[in-house]
Length: 144
Length: 171
Image (cartoon, rainbow over all chains, first blue to last red; front, side):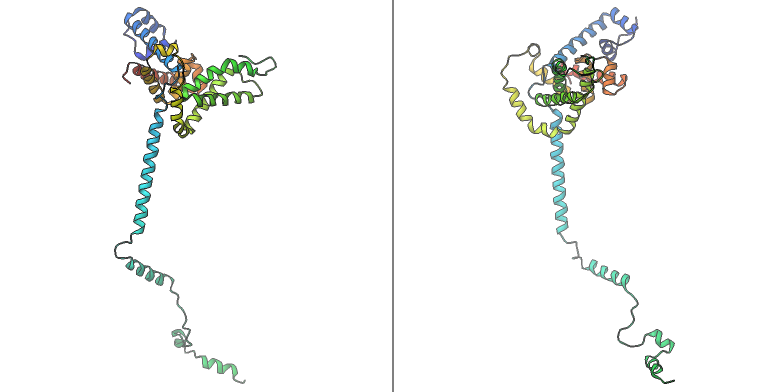
């Protein structure tokens, strides 16, 4: 005789499936036949319980976990937000003066332009070329 | 239930014949009497909106009901949680005698079975309900839920194994 049937095979046979060999074993083996009857009885009881509808206190066990998870997430977010807000209120060590000075220096270096002097004095380029404003005016009013 | 010769559905007859079954299925999948009734009504409204008769109205109803329950479970958990207290109070105050099923089963045993059933994955619940309670064949369940036969058998085996453990008090 073939070895006794597994629980899975018994369930398939109960569901009207399984091979001819397995059915033959079920007919011949008293132990497997008893297990098969026990499975059918259990399924009958389970079906009755489910058909009778949910009893008080049995509904939505997953919702409790979801509610707890949602609550935990809310608490974590609230604590995180409070901690970040508190951290933003406290000035960094050293008062931040060093950082301000560094930023000003950096801005001065980056945005500085070679401006021409606005005081009317000749620039170094003009002096090097020997150019004089008075000479130019004199040339304009000089009669030919 | 077959469509009339003109291809029109006899909605009233179909409602009378299938309403109890669809409501029971929804109650199994939602574990909530009120929501099961709501979803059942939605399902029949969808049926009434069908101008042409679906090829197999019973199976069509089941498929729509399973999908509607799945949507409801996914979207409305917070609402069920909010209204859970109300439902339990109402359930406890229903004045009626025990049904034969309730008499055969202790309340504690029933609670255990339902608790484990609700812990099964939605797929396992659907497969168990259609295969074991509705008596559909494996191929019909597979076709309706869009699964392979192997998947249906696997879900059914796991669900049965856990529910039997619950029945023996060792979930």
